[in-house]
Amino acid sequence: MKASVLFLQNGKEYVMVVKVLSVTGKFVQDLITWKIIGARTFSLQSYNKFSARDTSGHGTHVASIISGREVIDASYYGIAKGIARGGVPSTRIAAYKVCYHINCFDIDVLSAFDHAIADGVDIISVSIARPRLVELTFDPIAIGAFHAMEKGILTTLTVATSDTDRRIVDKLVLANYEEHVGNAINPFFSSVKPVPLVYGKELPSSCSEIEKRKCLPECLVSSFINQKVIVCDQDRSLREIKASGAFGCIVPISFQNNYSEIMSFPTIALPTESLDFVKLYKKYAKVPEVQILRSETIKNPGAPYVASFSARGPKEQKMKQH
Image (tube, rainbow, N blue to C red; front, side, top):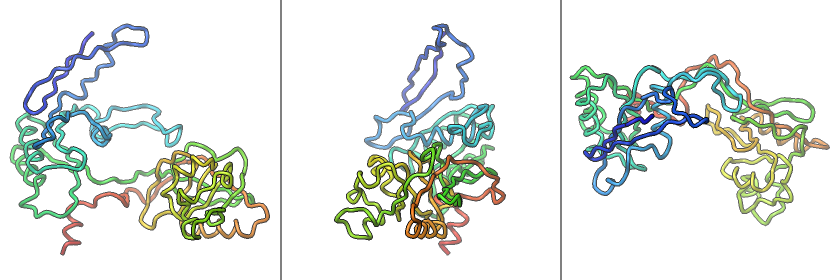
């Protein structure tokens, strides 16, 4: 069986023929969902060579939030298991790509709005955050949304990231069984049992104490941190710490961060009070050992709230401007 999908790039039509096979080599009708029914690109000047294909993952992400089909027993290595679905799973998607790398030209945004309106879409969802404030009468998204509204088409802005009623946290267990809760999406234990704890400032290198506290890559000594959990005063060298053989890492939570990040190896971000306690424990314990547990989900009564890194929307920006 063959599936023909129409793509349009710079006014030219391209038909992509897809063969759908099962693991046994037989064609499977059910694998074609027709979720994406078309795609166009809008690019100014030298960006004509780019296609509508998603290269960064952002377009796929926001499209799944809007229109993703239900996925039973979805999880991240068993964490936060449940049903994942978009806002309206029955909808289909017509994609209009207007940004390339960091470039989003006003003329491309307005052209995409015009084509979406002409194509007869029901809803336009835009996920573009501007780096600076623009007057409403000069904002291409506002102008395009107004044109869409005149045709009875709703425009939504998916530029904010909010929390859910479940929060993913991690726990650090000291050798005396005291627990400290922090932020991390970590599917792995640091070790089966507690392992030695070290502090970055103790690194036997020629770096300054401030540099060692931050665990800068040039200060790391593999023989010193290998098979251990290290405490660092910043989280910018996690890749190098992992490569140096550490079992795990303990870092501070930024004062603005109210979310957990996916970690490539056992890492936990602790609030200041807990991090200071761990440093004191390291200083005075005879045998300082810790264990970073696997992340878990807890009830989040404060939801929904907007993530600290996310855009706040035009209303708050206008308030800040004034």
